[in-house]
Image 1 (cartoon, rainbow, N blue to C red):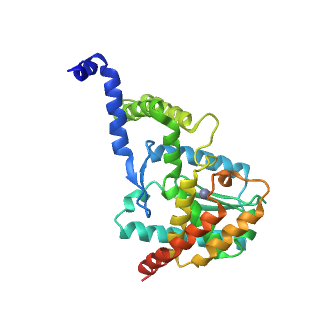
Image 2 (cartoon, protein in one colour):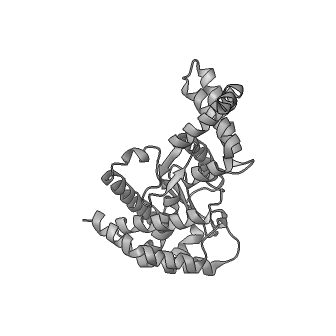
Image 3 (cartoon, rainbow, N blue to C red):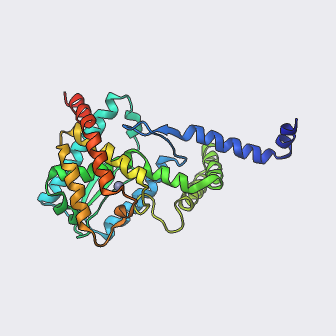
Length: 289
Ligand SMILES: [Zn+2]
């Protein structure tokens, strides 16, 4: 009966825990390709809205390259990888999971060795990484890796981890309010603003969603693995992966955002890639039939 008393004495706390629990249950999902169980509490649509704002800002600060052989390469590799994604998702009855993605590929004239894919599928490649990629197979390694971060919703998962229970409660409240339906446009605008505030708080003061949030070693490894599968389905040479990361390792110097992430040690990364290649090749052969 003691438990019952706790229940009635602290109805709000109990409700809150139930809310968190139900959110966590709803938010438990599996990562495509690897089938890892993950918890992501933030609505993808909200994350994508914020990402698109940042993406537009980024492109206005860094005007994209308008034409040329390098841009053609980036677009060609991007489109082939997205076709691979679509093939995989449609074969596995997961097309719905792609509805929040709007793929776009841009090249920016910047000597930094960098590339990123924002939540929702906005991909940016820096000209600085083109010489490290060397050819389309190398470019497919880096773009496959970046696209994998977005497909696996690593940004959402990372933000969820940063939120903690308190943040999850605030967010749950914001989502519930949002779901109660809009009475007026003003009310729905206020709700949207509130959700945005919570999401920004979740990302940490000043941190940029998706773009500057460093990934964990686990996420980096997973992006390597999924990237290989995408390359295989798209028909790229998987043996380009290890030499590409070796060239990246040899670069050193200033570290741009995505590569501030906790990357696996070069030897671990190489061993993992070698381990995944046969499986990726088998999957690739199956989808290219
Ligand atoms: Zn990465």
